[in-house]
Image (cartoon, rainbow, N blue to C red; front, top):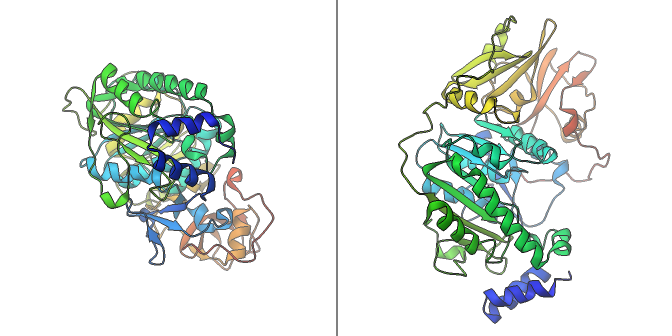
Length: 462
């Protein structure tokens, strides 16, 4: 790794000489840490054999990086591969949020912090996960669906557009685009692209992003600001600008000294720095700001939009079997041939966001698609922890069959005819339509494993 001399000078300015040397050694000679976060909503927890991430109850370290692509549990949403430092947002939310809230993840792709928030937020909260780049937004959508959360909408729009929905969110998390210094151990491109000019460009962009979205945060609401970089311009200095220019105060989060999280390198603001010479993870900066003012609004308060064009009545009758496919208090409706289950307590936000924001995954769960006289169950339903276990037969398959299914191949199974849920080691992979002599594969085409290679030993994470 050939680090820019200007980067080294920058580190020398913000850290004492001995500590700067240890950080540089960790960046240049250290190996990236491998960690993941288990999905407790699907019944998974940290196995006893793995070391838990100290600030995240569902996070764990791995000794080495397996081929996650060939682990069926990876595709089933049993866990999410995430840097341990980034899991700190789980601790922040658990520490500060005690009631259901409206939550916006502004720069959400690929979905690590979104799924961590969905895991940490109180029941009854709802999340809007936004990513401005369409291709990255599709990856975000895939990961949210695999995680199985019904209370999450995925959008791809600008901060300015989202900021036009005033006072909509109790919390906005902004993991803003940055110069990427904290990713140097994992990303050679970040090393080659870094320059002092890039740092300044990122700082200007960060302030613009927060300015654009600020009106969407309720008075008294929280901004969780984070970067994956080390310098002061994008971190302490930027957070201080947000506080002084937009009107906010800093919120302290209680941490354990044994975690070795570093504090502010500039001034005395409450902030949390993860550095690889101190903590097992990559570089991260995070702080929490509270917007000036006080709001009595709660997330259950509806965001009405009198001109909403959504949820039009249709002449299609909802197939009766759809009512029994999902557990919970849902409103079942049909939209353009798709049967959807939407939680009644987030009906208000549906009306507000729908006509103004570009959406690629709505709140709720797609149950199935009507084709002629048939109702074909959706993969979103298969991924949901709320699916009615008695609605469909299940077929447990071995590892080679699971991989064949995830490649989109037709498989042979010993099960009754009709729509069957394919499982592996208890994790649901998706649906097939069993015709007897073969089972037609209903796994989403864009998500299929493309590699024809099959490892001699399957990953053994769970």
